[in-house]
Image 1 (cartoon, rainbow, N blue to C red):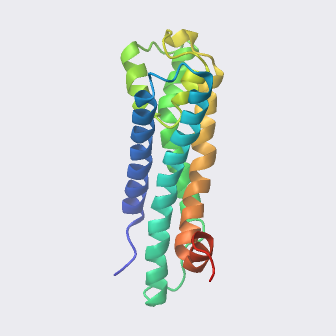
Image 2: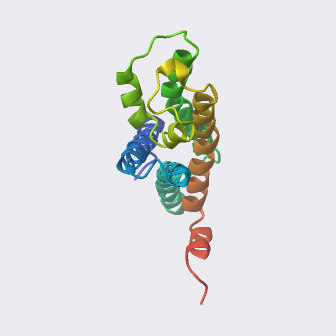
Length: 185
């Protein structure tokens, strides 16, 4: 067993993030009959962001557990401290790209069609319930409020590295994870 290539770790983390967005989009669309109630949109936002961040946490957790085994078997001298902070920032920045394209469309710089908004529901599924909160799910791209793509980018860019690094920390320090997860007898 040896340390994985950083690109392979990045691809795994990006896959978890992408899958989290798909799941958030599916969850929001499945709530469509109930989304007209004002509180359902807020609950959907909480759960979809939680799904996304849980999968980012899992990506860091698995890597932290692997690094702990490498360190215990003396395959490596020390483990990188802030690897998932950096990888999470890069993944969060990549998750901001659909929202950045939407921002350009909202400002009128780029012409976007309804097909992009349909794809956007899945590409940015974790923040898609914000569109229902902004009451902009059935409007033209230029009528979407400017704060929506900015808030979407902020959620991805700020919370992704925190969740991934926290997962790595819990994976590396398994004792903290056990203390957190289970009651002491």
